[in-house]
Length: 137
Length: 105
Length: 293
Image 1 (cartoon, chains in turn yellow, cyan, green):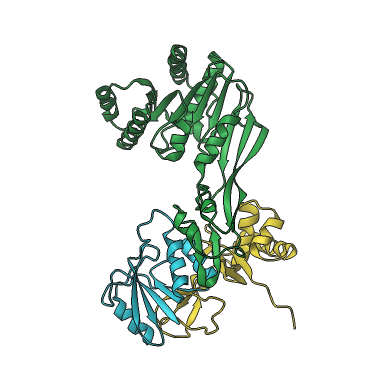
Image 2 (tube, rainbow over the protein chains, first blue to last red; image 1 turned 135 degrees about the vertical axis):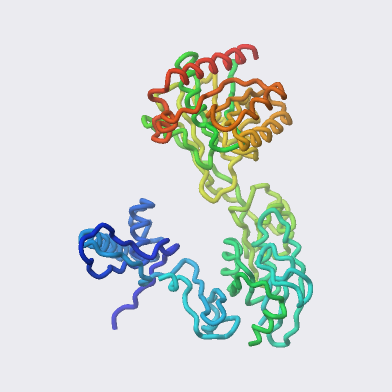
């Protein structure tokens, strides 16, 4: 069995759902899925100008894993630019700093403290619940 | 288990208060007996730190779940620390009664 | 002892040109009066005077610490006495959970809780809240800048620590104050000999200038007004100054080209002839005041 993938901690999901090239000729190829954690890696390294050592700590992964995520993010963006492909942001393996859930039945938003075992909506007891940040895709 | 609901007044017919730290009252329901008890929030008008004080009160009352309209950053920090579940019902102007009956299902 | 003249540049409203005036005034004074002048950026939440001196080199840096109390949960009896003493709601104590904590960002270092605790559970530690940096910028005695750590609310502490540390032997010190009329502004102007109020001829500029004038009259500080961006807005501010008999020290016309240069960080190069002359006049007025003290 492969090792469990550690969740990558991110502060906030990207403020957009995707980027589309314009002024292109002909139909562009299929979109590229940019993971939230890849967006976060680019943000931390190239926008906040953190060192990889600092950034990996913030995301709760090892330095090598951070480098892999960052590399993958850059390659995805590069191929999107060169091949004029659309970028869509996808949840990936991220976990938001503060986990908020959403109930599809009664629209309540709530947290799930670690001592609770029952994964149900605290208001209507529905089990149709999802992570809030997943809904933004 | 006890649940707290932020309330604008003292009594189950009062309106749900969308603020947490600066809510006027807290309605505490005992899930087993169904009894409700109202506590006035004496920290509602503090110049700062109302969220912290309200979270402190929740922990003191032994509440496991808080229902409000939103939670500020400091309230979130402390409620998380005390393992108190936060529930947000946004844009809900219903009365405390209605929310209690929703909880009972 | 040698006389030091301290000038604070304040405004009330933000964005009226405190920094523009401070930086220009500073360079002009060093050019035509004395190089024993230092510029002090007291807008510790977002200091930006440095941007206009790309040649700046760090001379020295000093960390600013705030003393904050810490509760030792083993010694704490959870009596909540410290909580009742704390004016700033920075202490959380929950007896049933045996939880006691002081929130460093809310704490104002007043020391009341340490005094209140009867069980010796509260000790004090040093918490870094900002930096004070002295820069050599090749002009006068340089620039001193205070920078507050994000999240801290102790602006006044950084400003107060900054003042005794100003280096060099100075005849004139210019404080670039933060906007507004709150505690950090008071901490900046409180030991100044003269205050330059920079305003703009708009209803907002006038309104906030009045607040600042109320403050300065209360703490009995002499001041004069500079109208920046003259030509915009309306003439209400002139009527007000005349009615209240307040000295109008200078009027700086609005100039789009010059504003563009400011935006690109090029404030000090190619100052238009007319604006340069306005600053010369302003310096002369200030020096006259200095010599009369």
